[in-house]
Amino acid sequence: GYLREDGRGDLEGHDDSLMDNLFYTSMVGENCPQCQRLWEVFGDERKGIRLTFQVSAKAYPNFRRVSYQNPDRLPLLADLQAAFLAVGRHFISSGISRMGGFYQRCDYSYQEEHRLLVKRFPDCPFQFDITSEGRGRVRFIECSLLKPSCSAFTLTLREVVVGKACDLKKVQVYLQSRSVFPGIVAGKEASA
Image (cartoon, rainbow, N blue to C red; front, side, top):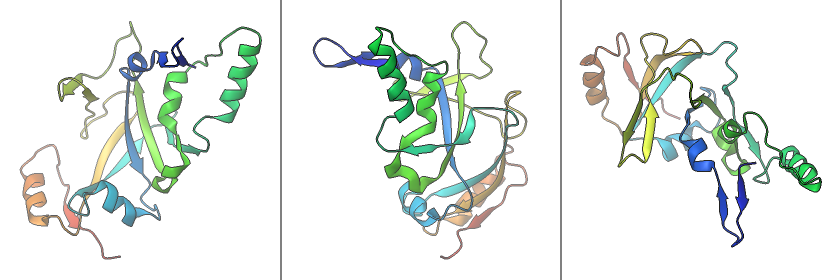
């Protein structure tokens, strides 16, 4: 809906400006059958940690399970775009910039992701401060773990699990030295 080929066959569109206004975090359900694989891929071969959050997002449409699709395009969206092009029009759905945040290729279905997405709308107040790092290419917002970050959702850190190859004592000392983690205790990953 917002990418198309130019006269040279290159893709052009507004994807960069749309992506500058989308912020999301990916989460996995605690009973994911592929948790061992996730420890290997995202937990730095068990040298990392796993954070368990409680997400309260009543009536917030931008916290939901990712849908895994094959092929890379949504069939219904492709059909609608083709139907509109047949009469010389472009179909652009309201909320199209958020669609990419909730659809992934089926190759990644083992992740069983849920995503919490926040969209910044031009000319509207934004409830979060945007922070940049890495020469400004990486931009993120921070959500409080102690109080609601906004009226739409809250994140509460419930548990820190240390991977088998991670130093448990080091993580415990870090958590105890930070007032932002009151009452959070780190435990070691259970054996498979």
